[in-house]
Length: 87
Length: 439
Ligand SMILES: Cc1cc2nc3c(=O)[nH]c(=O)nc-3n(C[C@H](O)[C@H](O)[C@H](O)COP(=O)(O)OP(=O)(O)OC[C@H]3O[C@@H](n4cnc5c(N)ncnc54)[C@H](O)[C@@H]3O)c2cc1C
Ligand SMILES: [Zn+2]
Image (tube, rainbow over the protein chains, first blue to last red):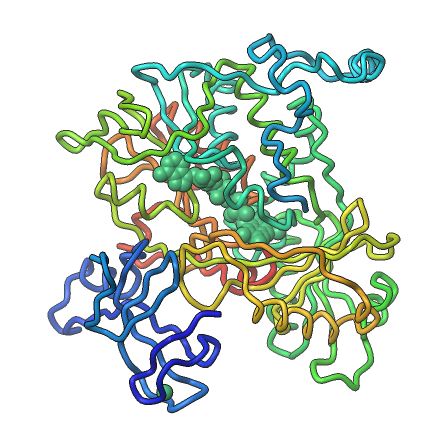
């Protein structure tokens, strides 16, 4: 079972959450180049290993939050916390 | 759908080392009889092992159906035989050995339909072409509609399909009930069945046989297949590929094809090419065998489930991808619970069936549920990725087109809609309506 740390509810089963993915900052539509738009809309790091991402506790407190997750082992930690040996 | 049955090249383990590098022989009724009389003692290996050369004209990364088919057609159609296929594990150890082997061409966009239909034509003659029984069974494919909007999309799909010469039509619940025994077609269920898109030429195939057949065909044409050879880096100088680094040493080459599906981001990163791809696991499960009762493949997008019966009698169940990105191929209990519930909504009579096993594979998802194929901004670095949950059926046409692309340095018409550059131009393909659940 995969558990995620909700900052408000504590560790819960992954099925309670929706995956929003890697955080991306929306560029200013007035000044953004096509490359910036394409990067924002479609391009992701798709990291194998530790990555930071946004999740939504859809079947819980219904709040958004950040966490760090190892996409190989699916170990998750609160954002900012580092696992032993992780990048 | 046997996975990981221990034998990686489709032949007897007992005599595995005999005639290791003997010349490949032709399979025939006569050879079957002859080897049968000697109790299979001298079947040659399906493909040979070679030392790695210091350089190849083309290096293909990934020994799934896409990489092997590309190698086969490079040699067969274009006479380019100084080719290596590298895989970090064993051939067919990725999605190509883990999929549910559904083949169809009833997609939504004209360019998608044409592309997948070419693959169906190649699959039709593949057994004869490869001299390997791939057990292609055209048994009919049904996509169920449980609401008005899916019914509308299906009518649209049927029209696009017919225009491209693909047999496809919307049928009503009475006709569905005749085709699929035990299907719950009463109007009193939570998601009543309103109709279905019926695609008679769709079907299933023996996925391992396709992989082994292409591997054997590539080998017979002079291609080198290197298993247990993980690529760890790609050398690029002045915008051109110059070689690949592997755990078994460096190989010089001017042409690299990335055929690594769920792992393709990692390989493209090595060449400095970024892609709009995310990796998610897709799970499947199989039951104990029962007597044949289900001829067709049945897919329900609303219930996120599909089912077919293998020649051995097992029911193969699949679903949509896990709802988050991951490089883990571990199955989950949540998946089986959800799957069982949905299967029983469709076919309550299956409640006594026992699941034998479940597994997962990695899927390289793209924003428009369409592949990314062709050259990249790095000269000599080609991609054949973005196969998501639907790429097994595309193996033959992709191999044929990628081989032509590499050999002629021109992008063939049949894949012209799928370049990496389409995301710059905002020209997405829009296949989601036909590819999200029905693989
Ligand atoms: C459960 C499931 C069901 C599916 N059902 C269907 C279906 O019914 N119909 C359909 O058409 N498609 C289906 N698919 C999708 C299909 O399986 C894939 O799209 C297809 O097999 C991709 O083939 P490929 O050759 O591109 O990649 P793969 O077969 O995944 O091969 C990629 C290879 O690359 C190798 N590799 C990775 N990294 C490296 C490295 N660094 N160095 C060397 N080698 C490396 C891997 O070991 C692997 O063997 C399904 C997938 C899954 C998981
Ligand atoms: Zn919460």
